[in-house]
Image (cartoon, rainbow, N blue to C red):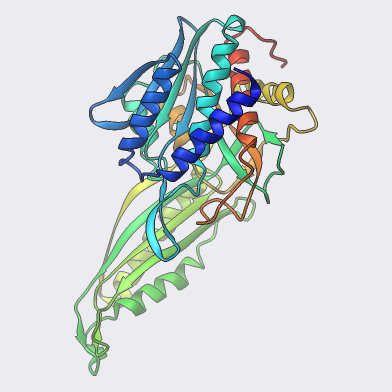
Length: 376
């Protein structure tokens, strides 16, 4: 297949995936489409009765190199309606990996071993990688590569970086429990809205080492009803925690729990919370980064290969190496003219850049399998 025909295939595939987004753990049609496409490409395909997502393989024997693509969309308000939306680029990631399968098959004479393609669900929930680990997707894998589109304010179009230094993220779902009271008698109870406002103020006074980027924000607060003369005693809220290191994240949560206790004591309410998802900070593997660095140089040029990128965003990709420490892994950052930004409902990018992403991942896989030259 020529470069032109691969690009045509990838653009058509992207349009289908972009037009049919599905949120985390509901990627049923997406999984079916990926199964159909990978089987067409001659892959051995494994699906799972209790999970969306799939694993596809080409080649045989050792070593085993894996490439991961996340497949879920965000639930987001678009033009006034909440709906699934691929504003994080996962439709592009799937397309890039499908393109890499085609190129790897065409270059099959250049490599020996097994290449595994992990199409992972529920990255946006922070739980999909853990499920793939549970299913044994990386138990026998030597190298693991991922990819993520990068916004224009982080990386220029046509550039790439061999390692995304993601920070840790933690998402808190919480509630304030008290009793409603008459608007004329505020002294008889606690106002959940005032308790929430006090908590927001306290969040601004949680500090970590200034050399370590970190933040904690309230991202949802719901309290009260239709009657304006009732002081609400109950509320629900969400918090988003970010830190560049796992140690700083633990510090943030420790301080947050102390803030909860202070609010409980002062307002005579109960603050309950759960952690539906947490994402670990990236841990660097020099060998994997070196391979990806060479893959970028071979596919683009030395001038267009950037140093590792520090980003405050998070990704559950890093659970693979935390849960399976033998893995040598890194995530490719791909510049593609992405604007206005990731998670923006109108996010867009130069779609032809996906072809270069597929070429870089192909090169990285071949180098990792040991048939190419890897410079130290």
